[in-house]
Amino acid sequence: MTSPRDWVVGARPRTLPAAVAPVLVGTGAAAGVGALDIGRALLALLVSLALQVGVNYANDYSDGVRGTDADRVGPTRLVAAGLATASAVRSAALVCFTVAAAAGLVLAALTTWWLLAVGAVAIAAAWFYTGGSKPYGYRALGEVSVFVFFGVVAVVGTSYVQAERLLPEAVVASVPVGLLACALLVVNNLRDIDSDSATGKRTLAVVLGERRTRWLFAVVIVLSFVVVGGLALYYRPFAALALAAAILALPPVGAVVGTARGLALLPALRDTGLTQLLLGVLLAIGLAI
Image (cartoon, rainbow, N blue to C red; front, top):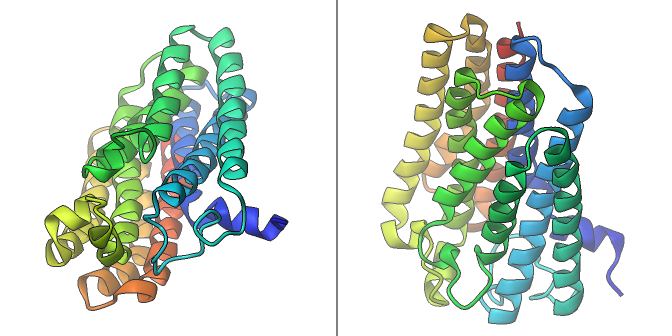
């Protein structure tokens, strides 16, 4: 019988900053124009978290039934390790997507019904990342999807449901948030590059190769802070507070650009998530002031 701890591990807690940070930043942007709405912000957070956990379970299910998780170096996966049946993990993913859809429906009713279309596309993207007959995550498109949905859509969407208008500062702020979400996926796929290559899972890391992937990670991290600097210079000066998060980015950049491989990259994955979370908190404060 699957234990509660197994389900928690299967939800991949290290990835959750990618769901929290964009909601914080979008809420900060809304607060900056006097449109803070805690209730709507919490609904947006529920959507984001439910989608993140849902896509994690969906990936566990799809990779598990395909056998691509059979020989991995990262944390244990439920289906591949036999800790839960494939049908149970699939059901868990569907429950999460249903929760996200329900919260999104409430937000749509409060703002605009166009959000239903955005939500439907987001759920479809979450499922077909590794699901379906031609998963786009196996075709080096995972980073693009993460940038769009856990960067642009999440930040701009969160600010929109509160301010009910498009905020330029939210659009710009979505870029570093999305880039750091991509960085999480880059280091994750770098860790799994050998097993993914062996099973035919062509992630961006597999396509680029180990050396280029390491440098891609560093470029993405640096670029995210460059954009924060531009945001502070041209829109909200106090957004510069988020530059302090660069301190947390130094250890993972050192590890990834260095020689860390396999399980030795797990601390880099953790620290990248913490970097994104701290940037999200500080950027939200800077936008709100």
